[in-house]
Image: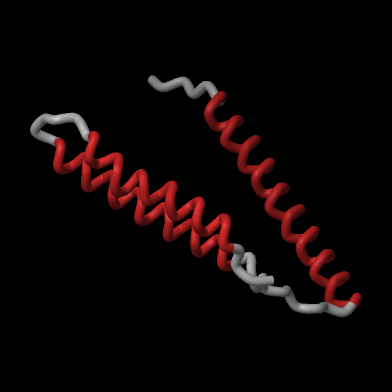
Length: 107
């Protein structure tokens, strides 16, 4: 699977319009130069980001192939970790709630 000519052309023209044509129509004023630079940088970075995402789909990375014992160990460990974290969060929530609602009489 290679790069298709059509999407590359369409997005290059689109971001070219944003980066080259739109700055020409920037409103006149003291900040015109800043607006033009922002439009050009936006177009360049968005086009580059799109190009990287598009190219990354051409040769996707394939994850490791794990045997069943490893998958079972990962599932067991993950469930134990999540349950421990949830238990600590709930315990801390109730302790905090108790301490915040405790009415202390100061003299």
